Length: 297
Ligand code: GUN
Image 1 (cartoon, rainbow, N blue to C red):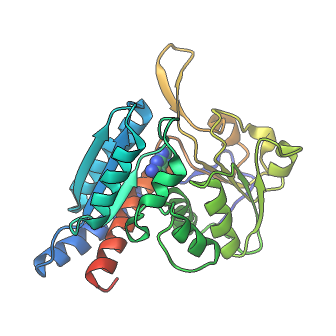
Image 2: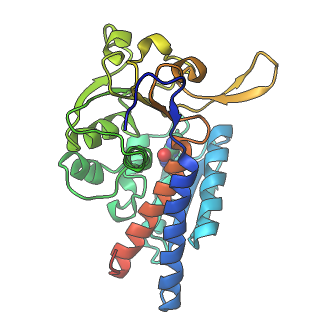
Image 3: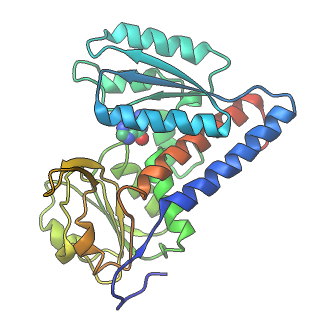
């Protein structure tokens, strides 16, 4: 429950929640293998040399290994032609051993992101970014859902954060996080406000939030004065910054130390939402595998 008048906010810890999900998936896969089915397969397309993407992809491949999902890496240089990527996706769409295809974002600027995401079969769209799946999501129907929003919803559920009738404010309107998390919160009967860089009095709007999801992509943007006492704060940002000590640090979109003193619940960075994104990618891959093989969920 959201609580008030405490010294510091309770941490929403992504580690045990994501571990439980991954453990359940591992058990599922071993049962399917024992019954004579093939391993689930995930193809990852990584283009160029973005250091953050390298880390994300490494974590995804590692999680596949833990769970028993076969991962297939497809690396391309930063100047790859669109046709080469589309041909690769076509092959993967037809490959019966591949249940999920993930195109790591962002893509180099010369590539048409929308066209490439559209080329992925919606059955294998484990990122939930194909318009088919996004359409189902906005219609409130079951489909493959984007991993980070799905992970946020799982965290809110695990920590029994009340959503019905509450005011949820989302900063950011990306297809990857902002728009889908707003839709999922709305489905759970929250009153949702979607904010972005052009919103007037962003700070004032945020101060009315019972649940604040920050997916702004700006390091340490949200301070204590933005927070309603006792609110639940979900920080989606991941930034590698140089600290006062000269060392590299990871921080989110929220000024954690000061916000922690006002909020009731808060996700840390790292160790909050990021872990859930990977777990939900695994869950989506197993879901696609089960659909393909006609297995019960
Ligand atoms: N880049 C940052 N987050 C994500 C994600 O969830 N999926 C993909 N494909 N790329 C990302």
